[in-house]
Length: 417
Image 1 (cartoon, rainbow, N blue to C red):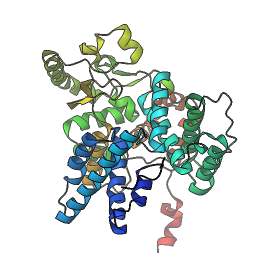
Image 2 (cartoon, rainbow, N blue to C red):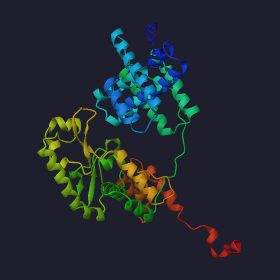
Image 3 (cartoon, helix red, strand yellow):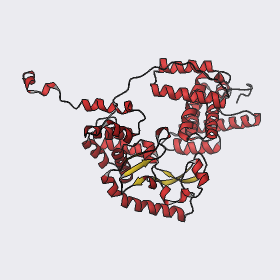
Image 4 (cartoon, helix red, strand yellow):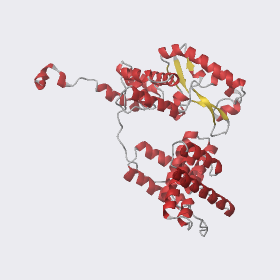
């Protein structure tokens, strides 16, 4: 390993400068180590032997590999671990600029009390900017940030919502990490037209539901029957469902707003048996002395034992325990969104539906079907939790398309002759 450089930006620089490896070996090492770094950052693990072992088990050993591949990749991991030891002995930070920026934004967001998803979104955009700039001094220059945002708008042609996400992430980075009081990125966004949402027919919804496993089926029934966003669905707790009044209370939804929506009649009838299973799981957790489920930070301080109570238990709990990324506590979390969305994709495929369906399209279908049934737009706005009725009006476009084409009218019969 070449150690002549005093402050190389990352392991790639030392790898390319190494005199002990051939050009082919450097290329192969860079491939597998880049793979490892990407996996490690996605899972939030520190560089070292522990994360390397986890990566090897989860990624490399997950599929059959040729023996020469395993030997070559093992050499690459050994080189990387030696490089980490060198960095530690030399007092150098082994993390690349992108990861250092990501960590700084995530920690600043934690101090500000931002939600985990928001912190990760901001950290992701700040990290992408750092990777694009590639220099420690330039990453703190708002002028370079304006250049990058302009590149996103003009060259990458990202959507309007993506542009706003990137701007908010960089604004947070400069104000809360770089401690700049006045930040004006002076970027003009490119408006993108709103797209008509994908909507399933009632028959298609029934076909999808019939191909879902029990847990995901009940979740999909509630999402479609109540018009919930994915995060609202997965964060439901026992206390949020009022079976007698057939209402669902959404707590701290989008823009931190509460609202009430409908609980479907058919779903309400199934909840009795489902809650019995939940009570058994809750009782087993209490018997084993497991920590209570996650509560919002302020509430957890005020009511430290509330997470162990029945009314706060998840409606859709995960089968296995997992480590809370904020507190590091191993507890029962709610159903993972990837588990639900993957089951939904497979059900759509099994039902033979020729549409690109996502979980949010069940919410679109709820709104469209209610509008077609005669629900007024203001009531629908309240049920969906839209701040502006113009957002709800997008479903009126599809309602107007239910009119018949003139091609099928009697006077147009000569066209088919």
